Length: 95
Image (cartoon, rainbow, N blue to C red):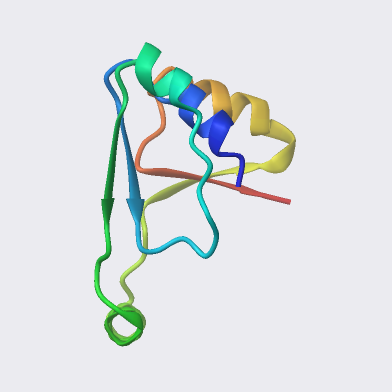
């Protein structure tokens, strides 16, 4: 994952929240963290069984995420929207 790019895209005083255990080591470039007063938080929310239960519940009750979809060809625009804090919930890029 391009963590360095993610950290540079966080607004001043913003937060990065890592949920769950990453599969590999997460490299940390402290320069954007320090210059932009970024907070990094983490949480291990539940185990695999709890995630399975949650997904089964969501499927059973037709729970769906609130997302914005954009074609991959508009990735730059999506990134700009992120910088302007204009993204609502999640933006999903698709081919």
